[in-house]
Image 1 (tube, protein in one colour):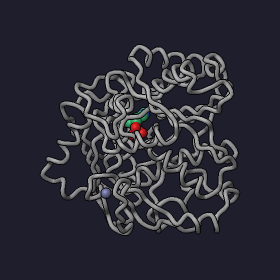
Image 2 (tube, protein in one colour):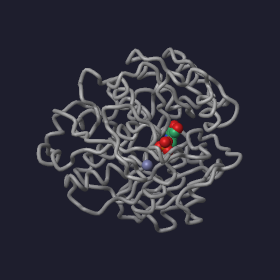
Image 3 (cartoon, helix red, strand yellow):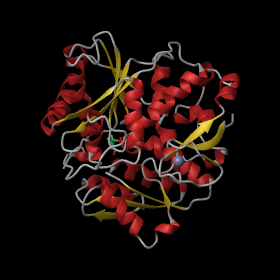
Image 4 (spheres, protein in one colour):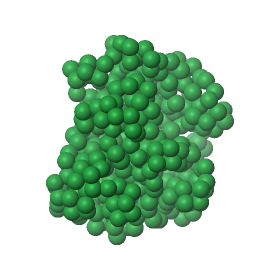
Length: 386
Ligand SMILES: Cc1ncc(COP(=O)(O)O)c(C=O)c1O
Ligand SMILES: [Zn+2]
């Protein structure tokens, strides 16, 4: 088994970069995407082969960027359940609702996927120190995988980040800095640090491989549905790694010819009313989003006033025929209670927001009774309890 990684390619200007060197953004400022020799993958690998492999995201090895197995930094991430909704789906008029529950991942969220792959590839390319700004979950995952890899990790978080994340990162041995303001301010503090030049920047979408780890959510759920795309997938969206990675994975699966039905799913982004730059940009028909002033929400992962990948998020929504919507804090807390009481799932506020928005999408007839809908439950509520 080998990786069919071919090169890195700019998601905007299409400039190529070598995959055996460390890269962050393209010189034009846009994220880089890993590109694979998909024709050869489809010649030598069949979806049936994958069923017999490891119970982690590394079963998709050919479509991941790692060359050497010895560099794999894993805590058995991925392979999360796709749970059928018993009550809430039918209650809101949807017969085919499934939850992709990402809370069983190491460190309790979907961020583990991206950081397992990014840390592994960084290790392969000789990195010994990583750094990132985070709203909490990405920091926890980065710190855990860095510990596993024997790397140093510097995490910059807004000072109001729930304590559980900070304690957890420190337990893994990370250097945690509390910064006044939002994740964008935490990022600024990181770039201003005198030691920054010694660190490899693993910020959301600013290195190419977190997206590669995240895209396995889509491979997995398509595999769980018997190699069929669902009709719609709903993503809580902050920095946008989840939705951007999913759209990339849809295109890859389509090109590989592994999916029985050719119609791609519609992708829906959900934000909080107090920080909804993507929703606003979509409404105003813009190609990228303006920074959101004074962002406010307790769904910390959605408090991202400006995302580097904003144009890619908007592209994924538009090309797939999806939509975007913002929900209120009240709707988020009501949805948290409903998910817990009705389904036995105590989910992070970001994930609860996605369920709250789904009710609107149903009323707006953007998803229909007979549709197969997957709601991405990105993390657990447990670290948010104060
Ligand atoms: C639980 C949870 N859900 C969703 C998100 C949004 O992630 P993204 O938009 O990068 O996919 C985050 C990010 O911090 C998060 O922690
Ligand atoms: Zn470029």
